[in-house]
Every structure is written in C-alpha cells, then in structure tokens.
Amino acid sequence: MFVVGITGSIGCGKTTLSRIAKNLGFPVWDIDGWVRRLYCDKNFIAQVARAFPVAKCGDKIDKKLLRNIVFNNHQQLKKLESIVHPCLRQNLRIALHKSALQKGIVVIDAALLFELGWHKFCDCVILADAPYEVRKKRVMVRDKISALDFDRINDVQIPNDEKKLWADVVIDTYTSINLLTAQMALLFEELKKW
Image 1 (cartoon, rainbow, N blue to C red):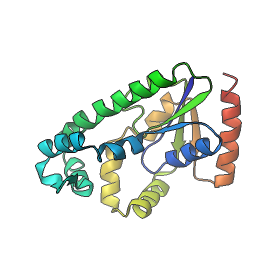
Image 2: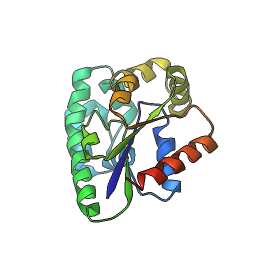
Image 3: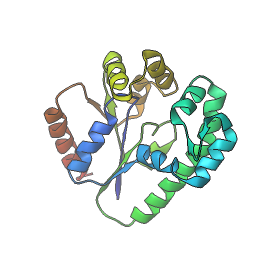
C-alpha cells in the first residue's frame, strides 16, 4: 500500500483534490467525514456534552455553538481536540491495519495532517494551496461564515507557507477544474511508479 496525504489550510482546495483522486479511482479516507460520523455517535456526543454542556441541544451537539466556543478560546479548543483526536487516531489505526496488505494507492484527506502528525504515515504528501483572499472568499461563501470566523479557524492551523516546507508536492488550486484534474492524473501516474 502506498499512502498519499492530501492536506491544506481551510479553503485551499484540499477537498477538490481529494474528489479528483476519488474520481480517478483511488480510495479516499475522508477525515472530515469521520468527524461528521463521530457527531452521530451517542458515546461521543455524551463525552462532548460533558465537556461542553452548553453545546448540547437535545440528543445532539450544536456544532455552530461549539465552534464559537472553541475558536474563541484556545484552551477550549484543546479540550475538544483531546476528545476528537484520539477517536480519529483509532479510526486511522483501524484503516491502516485493514489496508496494510493491499496493493495500490490510498489517499488520506486531512486538513490537519501535519497538526495530527499523520504525515509520518504517508509516502507522499500533496499540499493544496491558494491565495489567502481566495481561500477566505471560498469559505465565507461555502460555510456562510464571517471573515472574522474564517480568521479564527485559519489561525489555529499551521500556515500553508510552513506546510510547503514539509510537503512533497504543492498544487495551486486557484485554476480550472480541468487543469487540476490533468495535474492530478499525471501526478498519480508518477506515484504509481514510486
């Protein structure tokens, strides 16, 4: 198994690159999807509700309220991460174990690939990149959030300029989907040879 990590700060186009990889026929482990599924798990919800009782809304967590709490207070963010990250690490261990004997390429789509230290499990790391203002506009439209909210989320991630030092490949996503698809197809053909 050859593991490719696709990462990038918020709004960089990481998900677009992962979608292209999936369309090219490669299995993609969507870490954001793993997180969404956690928020449907009763045990996880109970754990978050104990740590953030104000965010509990019936039998669910009000994710918007929780986001406001954690992105306004670094200690609260660390508290949430101490609940979420071990669950994600366990999911990754299971996925890696199940796939260990398979041949071919598998993709990990993770915004916090470097922050979680998961790059050490990757044979190649692709970094999605785009100018700050482009990223901000993308996220404000996509998530219907303010510029201030974008900055709060962006500020807790390692800056893309720093991530570029650790990535094997940097892809500028501020271009057409056709060009991105062609770039990814060529790159994955090369990765098959590694």
